[in-house]
Length: 178
Ligand code: OFO
Image 1: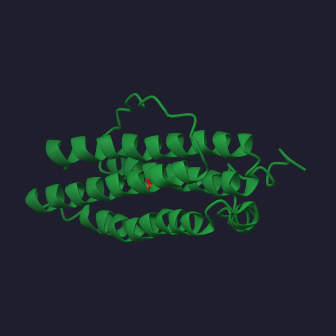
Image 2: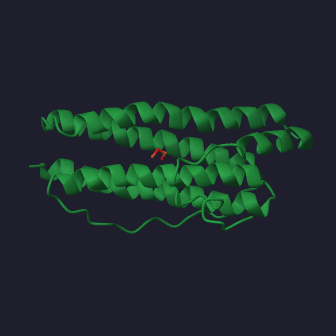
Image 3: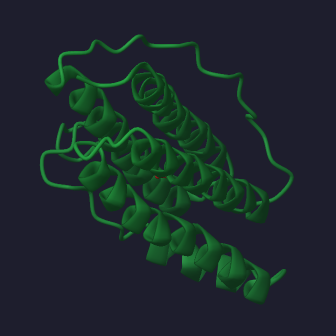
């Protein structure tokens, strides 16, 4: 039986992970509007990952006999002044999410919730990658500066990110684009 404190915190985390997907989907739209289709693609894969994260927490509650109560997602930023800004926002958002995961682990330890700990430990490790990915792209963009050629090259590189097999967000898998 999950404690009320642990339930509330994990239920909130479902919202945070869905907000991550929502924020990154907004960036997909922005990058397409800037003809940075590689960056849009990278973020599209990230939307998929965030949905998986939300479902990991969703299923954890469901499997423990609790039911998720979905909450409203916050209003979004839809425009940025240059391609670096959304990546900075993404990095800051990942740092925020890391803090949330650490808070969850603190609650699990306080509540002696040994069932939640393995899931939370998975997320502690996952957040290292999440922060590193976005931080690295920020640093690469800062290195590139005003070089259009550099931006073009990085965009192409980010466009090579691979969707997990069977992703419902992969436009190629569903013939949404040629
Ligand atoms: Fe779910 O890790 Fe990013 O936000």
